[in-house]
Image (cartoon, rainbow, N blue to C red):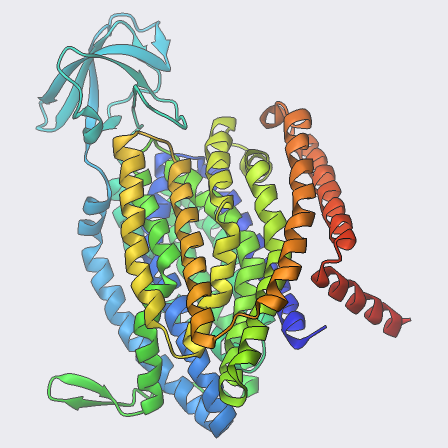
Amino acid sequence: MSSLHRKSLVATAAIFCCRFTGLLREMTYTALFGATGALDAFLTAFRLPNMLRDIFAEGALSQSFTSVMSKVKAKQGDEQAWTLAHRVISQLTALMVGIVAVGVLATGGLMQLLYPEELRVNITAGMSLPEEFGEEVQAVFQGVQTTADGQKAAAFSADKRLKGLEGTSCVRAKALERLQVGERVLLTTRRSITQKGVLYVSPQSFMGMAADLCRIMWPFILLASISALCMGVLNVFGIFGLPNLASAAFNLTTIGVGFLVGWWIDPHFGPQALYGFAVAVLCGGVAQILVQLPKLRRLGYRPHWELSLTWRGCLPHFSDERVRLVWRLMLPGMIAAGITQVNVFVNNIFALYLPGGSVTALTSAFHLWQLPVALFGVAIGMVVLPDVSRLSVTAGKQEISDRLAEALRFMAFFAVPSALILGLWGEQIVCLFYQRFRFDAQASELCGAALSAYSLGLLGYAGMKVLQPVFMALERPWAPAFLAVATCCISVGLNYLYVHVFGLGVQWLAFTTSCITTINFLFFFIYLRRLLGSMSLHVLMPGLLRVFAAASVLGAFCYVAREFFFDGFTQWSFWWRLAVLAAAGAGAGLLYLAAASVMRVPELQMLTTALARRLHHRA
């Protein structure tokens, strides 16, 4: 087993712990609060600082810093590498304090831009029949009126009450644009995948809550950025397990502290309990740093403040050329690394125009989709970055091409079957992990549709995570940055078309992300092939074709299982769902491995040989 494979498997095991605890965190959210407007507000509030963390800290800056520090360590030794680390961490801390201050001040205005305008709902006729309720009520639109307290409200007349209607209930103002006074409309308080011809009534507007929660969580980007640089330092020294376990510490701290503080605020875990989870996010950020500090100290890191800045007039100037290189690589890398995160944020904005719970469904599906991507794409990319950085100094382009082809083939061996399983069993997987307490079967259907759409882009997303760091290692980050701008425009256009023109549901927002990630991967591959002169197709394609052939057998099995054995899955008990899906998953896995063995997939042969050698040594 090569060094790349061995380190990738170590990183994969650690990332699995991270992603599994992250999944537990999402399960806690959905179980306590359901797919509701309140949880939508929390996730939207967290998305702003978390998106900047993903793009800036754990994306571009971490990658550029890891690449430069790897080269400094190889050429100039450990002492100079630590000097670089001190200076970058000091500058990052100062920058993030400013960003947090601006973010806290600007949050109110940002939320007003993100959230669609909402109007209260008044049903003025038929209130004399309180014994008649319905989750769907035929009503006549009476226009927008001004109430006694000066607030605008959408007035309707109906012959019975709408179940769940309260004084705070509201509708989206945009949904009323095409309605004429006197026009009949169907009002509903139930979520649905498609709402064409139906006007959804939300329990209340959560924009104010989203702004308050976001102000609490803004300092998280400072804590996460420092943690990301600590992770980069450990990666340079060949340590890949502990940094990812730090993320597991964040998830577990968020669950524990959030549950306790949320229960203290509201023992029934109403919307106000989400403030406890906002505080827990900050505690989790602190835990993420503390987990890594002991190992850093043993390696020789002694934190001290060293900005290494001079002033030229009114502009700051980096006195260390190596620090300047980190930030120069970071700027285009920040754009390129944020492709998917920006698309997710854009999806989040458009999902706010859909029925309540759509943001939760989209976010929950995205986290399930990220699990195999992180295990195979991110883990391999994490190992590839310092590896290619060293090869760019000590070897030629052909060695880099061979290493990338080997990494992509290894990634595909796991990502292709994962995509098929998530795509064909999306609703069943969502139901197993999330459906409990306030997260009902209707929410599982909504989230499952989004997960199936996300699965179409899983291979491209995982491949993009493998190739993207290479541009940092080769110091050619601008091409992915230009592509990011173009694909972001495409994403906005497609989302607007799906939501505001065709009135389609949340799964089409996920489909947009799949399209964008696939386009980006193909561009990365073609551009790197031109840059390196080759992508070693003679190494990549034979193994890749064998993986697809073996995966086709798996896909047929998953389709038959869904059509004939999963009928009524969302109504089963949890233990019965777990038993059936575990048995089906085990059967699918064994069938894939058997087909891969028959097809002589190189990655399977390599793994079985390594396992046999290890067992022989132990014997």
